[in-house]
Length: 169
Length: 370
Image (cartoon, rainbow over all chains, first blue to last red):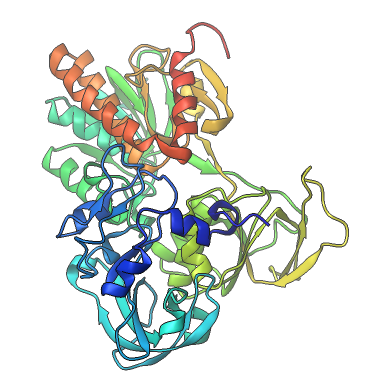
């Protein structure tokens, strides 16, 4: 079984580790940070301009993979809704004592509401754990791409990437 | 031409999609008179059903949803007083560059100095037992139903084809409230962007590679589909059949350029599988082998709206230059910038193939069928 993205649709662990858009473990420990799961060289660069701190670089040609500068990234999450591929997430590893905060783009109705308990899923949409919705950001500039933040058990913060659509509906 | 209305224009553009509108805007911006003719009731081609955010860079309007790009094109056409004739199917092109079309039940002849054919492409069909049952449709048709007419074609869908169309329409069907039971792909790998595949996987849609449809079953409409696995030689694997309960089958197995008008005009063609089949030969100005007849968009090779708009701009700029509306040096500068933007889209593992196919097409000698 080939685990590369063109066979699974999901970046493999090796692809994520090799991706310049994925923060180091050390950076994750330091506070909230963007987590860019863009591992194919497609012609696209809105993330570069989306970052108010210049923490994302694509450069020329625009097929370059986005490079995340962990020192410049403040974890503001402004890039999440600007990625046309919905491939940028945010992870706040040490959010509370035993939990992490994961933010992801979400374009389905109904939108969850702050305080909701929601079934959280992994990159295959499989249920991982229940999480609590901490915020739902859907400013005009998001142009319809809501950004949902869920508080989840820390152990699963690198797996959770969505609300389980099957269970949630 | 007795009894027919005869109009004149400098440039006639056939097709009011992204390529045609972009072409017309460039002609009008240079001061030319231009008429866009489209058989549909609304302009914009397929742009108004593209509710996702586009890729590319700021110059390509990346991050903007397709229908917003369409709205912007329409604003520009209005501001530049581009004439857009709708509900007007073009039925003939004559050697003297007269365009014959029907409007309001009447034949009209439009005499032009240059013609830009931006007719687009049509979805490929896939024949299998049961493929004529109601509920089997093109993915593009389903996309029109949900995003333009706001009608859900079904509740439980099987998508065939993992190119970007299959992946994106699957996602949009779920946004519209349907469930996508599975996506199947005959090839051993996903055809479209991984990020588009990731979106539907996160929503729990399984992608079955090396799988095809054996038959669709149902009394008055699709009720289920039997799918099967394919081996490395694309032959059915015995005993691999599985039945899936679905009420809709969407087919996203590629597009074919709509080339009838270019054939009619006597343009030379080449067969380039990477561009969707038979496509008119053209040069770097998008001019075909028939002087004064240009092509832009999917008719010149199936790509995407972003490249279609750039090709339209090239064709429009070249027409304006040919009409003496733009000085040669000014036109050259404009075209250089367009080509740079175009080439930026035709790079990387997904764009390289199209760029090579296009380079091949542009490099073909004129004279004889290829």
